[in-house]
Amino acid sequence: MYNNILVTGGTSMVGKHLKTYLPSAHYLSSKECDLRDQHAVDKLFEKNRYSTVIHLAAKVGGIMDNINNPVQFFEDNIYINTNVLKSAYTYGATRFLGVLSTCIYPDRLADKDYPMLESKLHDGAPTPTNFSYGYAKRCLGVQIDTYNKQYNTKYNYLIPCNLYSEYDHFTGDKSHYVSSLIHKIALAKKQGKESITLFGTGKPLRQFMYAKDFAEIIFRTIMEDVTNSFNVAPDNTYSIKDIADIALKACNATNLTINWDDSKPDGQYRKDVSNAESRKHFPTFEYTSLESGIRSTYNKYYNELES
Image 1: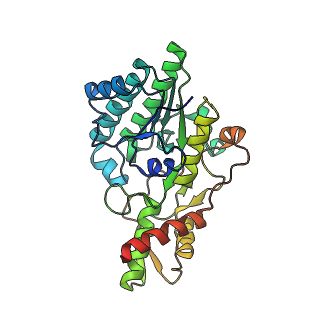
Image 2: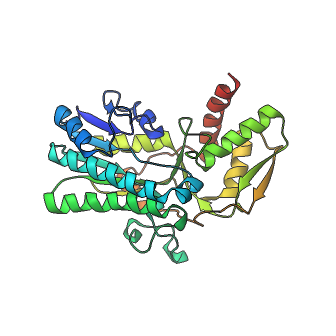
């Protein structure tokens, strides 16, 4: 049934893990096709006639990159999502799975509304620090819902919490908290330093998931023909400081001191989401513990840093 699968963002962190589960899919890189160009996307789909599309591709970056380049984050993602979804439908894809982000949820809700249910998605604007990215990704959810309503398609989307793995960006504008944290710890150990500096106060709350776990959920969603849309996140929510402490333990670096630079933004205070809906479909799924996932990522990254 699913023998002609396209994975956009094929060289991304999730894409690389997905190859373990779907080795015969076409893992599209940005070098093969500029997804911002509708003509190029149409040619790709006309030639290959994919039956299933797993849409991972997006313009992504860290807090400062989002703050400094809001136009690019909005426009590029709107073009990419619209072009891929439109061509998928036009050229006969029967399944489309879009990957969103918990950044799409409202910046702040009442305490009773956490962890956030999927029904809370449109109850407020995304956080200001990645406002345009959040809205662009939210728009993809709206687009998929409207295709299902108007064309009776069975397209859906998954909303993962923050991700990390050995395939993430560890430095530069595209790095995210856990991966950047691992890099700082590894570098401090290599250079014999006694401390690391992290942005903000350490107080915000976050969910982090090992990207291989999310790749497996994507695979099972496709193979088991699950067509509704839902959050994907482990059960635990930690403060940024707690995550840093867990990372120090996982990286065998508890001797390091953490200096918090509160002149830098914290970002959204909390955006934890409910995984109740995903548990209905995958009730026995076992997520990799944060300590175990960080340890695995660190060991692979540190070996590369040493070589």
